Image (cartoon, rainbow, N blue to C red):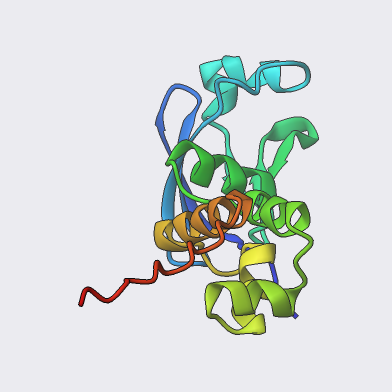
Length: 157
């Protein structure tokens, strides 16, 4: 079974911004400024925000009073903000194109296992794979042109 990434360590690096070390060996910066609707408006208080802790199991970030953000959402935000492909984007690509693990693996020249890792986020999706997905989809969307028949040359005598 493939498990989503877990938080190994996290540091506050600015107002409403954390840098997270992931089980995928990535370090991603996450800007939480857009998450200020209740109950996350509590994070606007710098003293409260500074009390952030990593969940004991790495399942996310915790603050006093039970406020928390799950690792899956933080990972998705971090990759999105870094301009990298995300697990949800990869799943959407597969769904949009009616691909199973096997057909996605065949389309990208990969193993089913790696496709499963990408779907759960247990392995990071490289920019090259993200671009390959876009290219594969664009190629399929273009109407195929029939080759023009070869013109016969008449012999000059």
